[in-house]
Amino acid sequence: MTVLVTGGAGYIGSHTVHALVEAGEHVVVIDNLSTGFSAFLPESAPLFIGDAGDENLVGGVIRQHDVESIIHFAGSVVVPDSMRDPLGYYRNNTMTTRSLLNAAVKAGVNRFIFSSTAAVYGNPEQVPVPEHAPTRPLSPYGTSKLMAEIMLHDVASAYGMSHVVLRYFNVAGADPLARIGLATVGATHLLKIAVEAATGQRAKIDVFGTDYPTRDGSCIRDFIHVSDLAQAHRAALSYLRDGGDSVTLNCGYGRGYSVLETIEAVRRVSGRNFAVQYAPRRPGDIMMMVADTSRIRATLDWTPQYDDLETIARHALAWEEKLLQERRGEGRQAASA
Image (cartoon, rainbow, N blue to C red; front, side):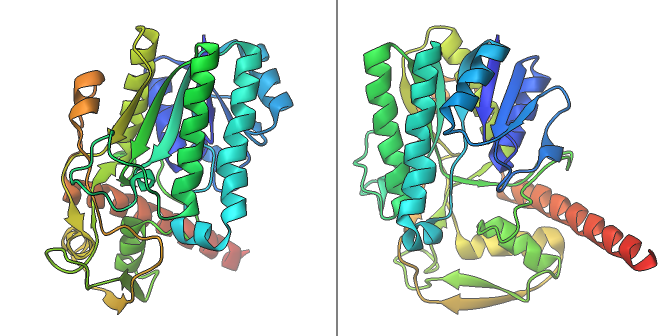
């Protein structure tokens, strides 16, 4: 039996592929490498370069590798970009998922794990936010993911497909051994930007909105370590194989840190100061988002290992310093040549 991971060469996908392979799973990856890196994949995981919405490609991979489960990461994830290019997000997130589901149904795949987001909640009325909270996304990104969730639910009901929807809160950090991490150029993740500033790659970090009704005026987020999130996918797969009912689960730790507190954590672990510039609020940003994690902890065999903001920041910093050393090494080799 084989697990197909779409977007498996990306940030979260590659961590999950490593977690699956280390657990003895047979894994195959489809990724168009628009934001992913083939070097981040274990040698034992074959990579098919292409689009997860290409039904001929997906169907061929499923048949060739006897795929019995799909974990779907492929898509676009930047909220401000979705405000500028909503049609691109409906294509990459919603339409791609529709095509992937069609290929899965045709091939008889009956287990599906979907990478969703806490952005489906919008500004929640209740914090921590439970899975049954109203879904009122503030951005095309959140809406595109919610539409995909609805499609998956309908397809599962019609064709008997068991599924888990994982709604991510703020994913951060890197592999504790610094083998892989977030390497996308121009990434908009707060911790990524902060460690780039701490390593001198950015002149400053912008904080969008300091007038929110929060403890320090900045937005509050529930950060989850990417390696813990990868293990949540592995646990979700085991849950479905054991006959678990389809379910939607929040993926976070259930505690919130402000943007300014997160910046201070990076300053502490790096021992470096860097400039912070305050800017107006951005359209689509959510004031406060903290997960109610009671359901995931009760449903999955999953215990977080890195539930600590400074640990997350330390791993992100170690990965960023490794990337920087590699870039400087390439520069020296080019100069000497």
